[in-house]
Image 1 (spheres, rainbow over the protein chains, first blue to last red):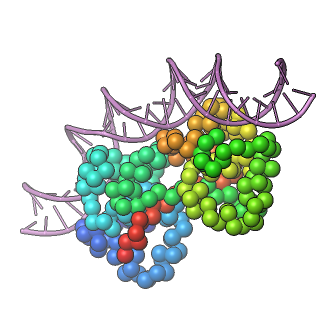
Image 2: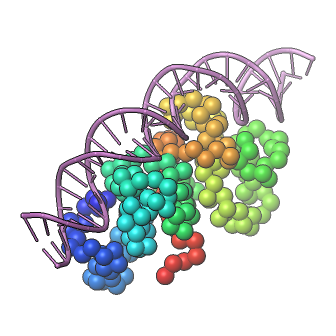
Image 3: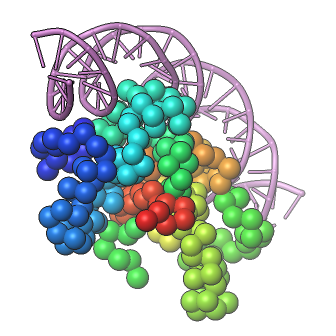
Length: 110
Length: 110
DNA sequence: TCAAGGTATCGCATATTTGCGATAACGGTT
DNA sequence: AACCGTTATCGCAAATATGCGATACCTTGA
């Protein structure tokens, strides 16, 4: 799980606790909004977040999606860039989400 | 070019004119905001819009991206669902955009 | 009508992703 | 320490996307 560099060590095993630590413990909304934009764009991180929020292990999500744990692990690897929309849609569907994709102009075009 | 059903017939050939017709002519901002949400989610349509806004033909964009016209045509087909992020990133890059991806909960989770 | 530019579609070789098992590694618990 | 659940990584077969030329289609303008 190295989709974010700042996730050095987690010592809890319960997904809810982890989330709590990452999002609530330190500063209710502060850190979240700071990292928000950056993280929203990271596909790997979004999958991880949604999965753990749902309280699922990679293996459990894999079963829902119809694949195997190693595939989920690969998708949550930030260094992996080979995502396809079909796979992302499958993941999203299993997690009751929809995929939103936008091509936004780099400098605001008009 | 069938990424949207309502694009029955276009009779202009200039990309700028087409855009003008679609976005400005009828109602300055009205129609745009109506279709906005729906269209934003259609990858094919976004590629088409950005390409034509840039005044490029499929062949021209293909050259920028480093592929061929038929590939662009395939990507702009709304029925095509086999997009990969790598390809989308290449397209976006050529059009000076960045790719934004979000998995949004279907019914607001918490 | 014909020509030209643009787009859609087909087929196939190549490249990349997915599927999946095996296994290593890590952390927590007893 | 040994066990257990979880995740990371490897290798390879199968599935899928891309690369690309050829060609048909469509619309506009001469």
